[in-house]
Amino acid sequence: MRRGRTITPLAAATNEAVEHAEIQMLASIFGAITLLCWITFRSWRAVLCVIVPLVIVTIMCNALMALLGIGLKVATRPVIALGVGVGVDYGIYIYERLQHEMTHAGLPLREAFYEAMRQRGTAAVFTAVTMSIGVGTWVFSALKFQADMGILLAFMFLVNVLGAIFLLPALAVWLGVGSTEKARGRGLVHS
Image (cartoon, rainbow, N blue to C red; front, side, top):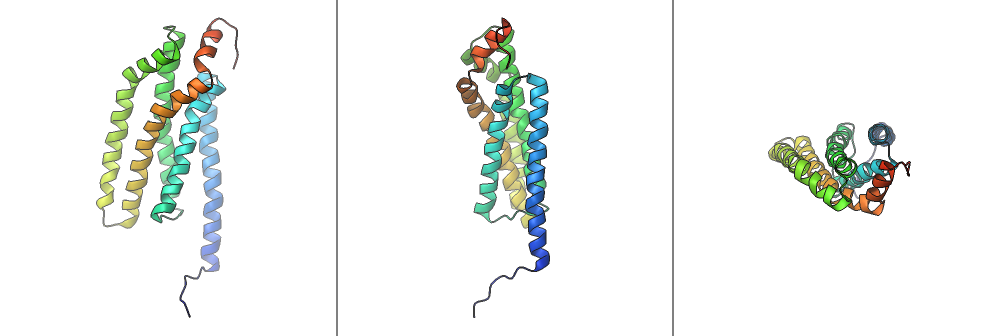
């Protein structure tokens, strides 16, 4: 007879509660970020440029958790929330500067992104690398939980900044952000 891992009714109920709470937590976080981005930028294009990279990184983090055998537990849930909370900063910094350069300096999207990266990109990358190295040292902890959280947070900090640098401008081009910003400045478009 093969010995397997038996899940007790209490463990099954806990797993179900954690899954339900995960959905609520992510919906709350992304809902709040969406609302605040909408209030700040007043554009659904801006909201998508900031939110889509975060959603993709969150999905990748869940995949990494599955790959490393890190279970979704009460203790691991806040890590994703923290990663999203810090990661949204990178997108907001870069998009804000991008929008400023297009509306106030009249630059096309490509040049506006160059200026945004010149002015905000170094700080975003420096912050992401510094924070990733800091939490990455947790990998050497004797506590498995702390080591796992170090891996996840370092991953989220680095990949979120990469999403803001590479995916955000691609989305801006695809959504036609540059053309709508010029038209909005002339009073032709309301997004």
